[in-house]
Amino acid sequence: MNLSTYIVDDESHAIETIADYINQTPGLSLSGSSTDPVMAMNILAGESPPQLAFIDVDMPGISGLELASLVAGKTSVVFITSHREFGPEAFELNAIDYLLKPISYARFLKCIQKVKDQLANLGPGADENEILFVKAGTKGSFVKIPVPEIWYIQSSLHYVDIYWAGEKTTTYLTLGELEDRLPAGDFCRVHRSFIINLKQIKAVEQSGIKLENKELIPLGRGYREMFFNKIGSAFFNSQQP
Image (cartoon, one colour):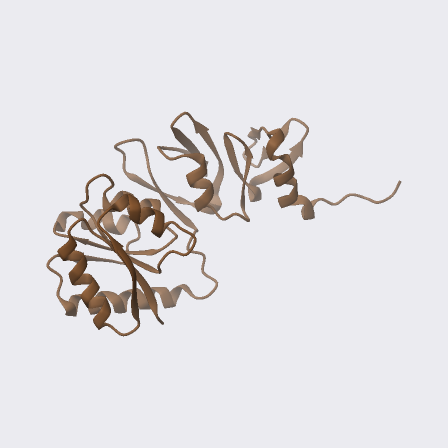
């Protein structure tokens, strides 16, 4: 297994230490690093993200915890920090490990073995996008949302409401950001303000799309073609005159 890695830390000397460890360790390759979490987010949530990201918890602008929640499912995460008290939050975000500075090479190797073991246990058919972590409100905690249990997502001004398994979670993300993170085969934008889980459809009516939870979601004119292209093979009509 050859793991591509990325480092995000606002301290350049910390990046140098981890980069040196990566270069010393067979089976690892360093794809890049950044002291800017916003710039790093574009890499970690991009089309070809690294398999493993070392993310500092305490950074200006976007904290490591916030960054990890935004790239959840795209890359595996190991947190690095000088503050021991951040440990519980790290594991709530499904981080594989938590490295406390200063980091010894022996501790780094132990972490890498843990990463390899966990990735191997996922197996080739595992879906890393089954869980989504989003921050509830502006100062709330991160909420763990099972992706298959999402019914629909509705945008409202500068935030979105995620409706899932009888719950409603409000988070300050855009509909477009969530659309990019969700499995394209299971979710579809059906209106400028709505994304639905295609597996939650109960009926397609003239007035809109009825979901299993009895919600009726509008189908926007500009989204009809994309929607019917996605579900077209599921329609079965008699060919009798």
